[in-house]
Image 1: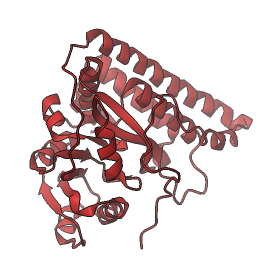
Image 2: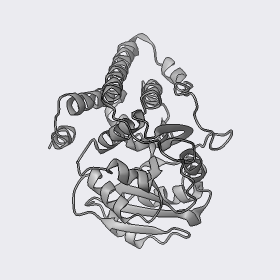
Image 3: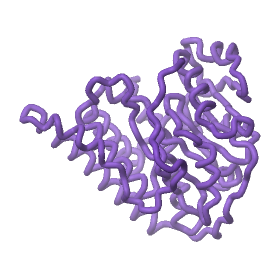
Image 4: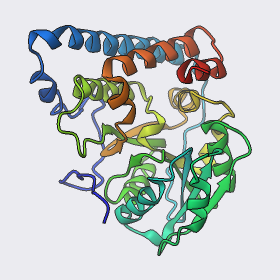
Length: 324
């Protein structure tokens, strides 16, 4: 069988009421490494995280000042199909396990629809998907003609049959009974969209990268306080609200930041909250293991600064990131 992600115990589906109530247990993992050789590195991580928090604060204030009024959103009590849209690129080795894991964590598999959009993989991902025979898996496979995650998300949403949508990265693990949590969250009054609490998957790590726990704490404070979750947390909403917001745009990068910014603008104008629940979605540690926490955090802040405040096109940031 596949190696399991450690699921949190306690009451399943309990919703986060206090925006600043984040899990600080991982901070102790960083404290073990605070000997003098690592102290300077941790100062850099804290500096990068504080910079990100400052940019988030400025972005939130700007959004609040520019918010336009929207009519209140009625509670969503949809019990129908939940469409899970998964964009992927060169994920042949993990896409089957990703689908199996999602099926195992669901409370009601019969009310799930998977839409996997391949963005031009060169490792046989599309062929692997077409050959899959998973029981109780209602799965559509689409091969996108346009590069970029934004285009893949657009095509997946257009092909979705469900009244509820969950946008999920191929390397993100969902919590137990995630479908029930989504339905409960969207049924709350004046709630337009939601996401899971951010966590990095630590399976198989002998020693997590220095600064990882600190980064997680700051990321969760940012997304809960400023209503700015990112795509690797799993974004969910009703199909009707997705269409009303304008959906994802056909961009190579920053598609989640651009879309969630519009969700937040509607929320600040009275059009429905963006809620972050207690249950955790664990994303792949690949980029932190390769580049380290400090470099990744600094790059994130540079890209946000360039895109949001300097008007640098997403295509240019894509070339910077992939050095193309």
